[in-house]
Image (cartoon, rainbow, N blue to C red):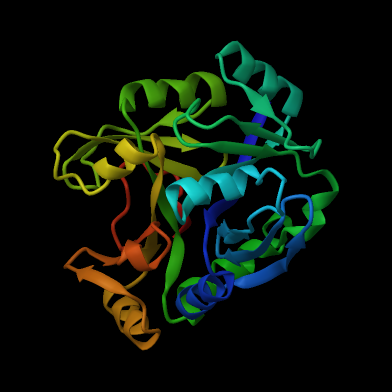
Length: 296
């Protein structure tokens, strides 16, 4: 069993047009899909920017007398926010066995190539997908992608995007969460370091090929993500992006009319209340022990 790249991050949104417009203005992504799925009863778009894929999804309410999809039930209960992180995997049956042995229930959602964990059974809801023929649909899996990734987004696009630094997952127990990712998903722990979220203490793990998760445990009632833990449980609350030049990124965000909530010497944070409860942060800082740092 081997975990690969982040397949996509799935924010559930109440207005797909607005979400796509936001990502277009800020990141200049390549859109590889936009459409409706009758199986999932939703509209969605797949947006690729540098090493990252975001799939904003707008679930629709069910017809009278029918049950809503899990996507709709989630947004109906918790409002717009990230539903799950999806990773590529090789060896799906072995992964399913590991999850079962760890006491985690799974489902394929009616799609044989997928493995979904049940809500609240893992530190952040997870999806795994064995790409097979889908490889042709993800440009990042082309041998030519690094040339575009490492030139266009950092040097041509005005944001100066280098990579996704990390995803922040609020958890009730950072030590137990890190142990789950290491023992079940072969994650590698990064050195202990300060949390990026005020009022939290964090563990950082590298999952799969190149995705770092900050497992942030609130230790102060004023912690801005404590309310997410209380309302939802362990869940994704933020995405932090490394940029080449924070000043240039600030100028681009102003031109793009991005909803900047705060700007300091080391980071810019957007207003998550206006970005579907996913905090978007931009920084030049590199996490201690990030093995991707040598890539530039």
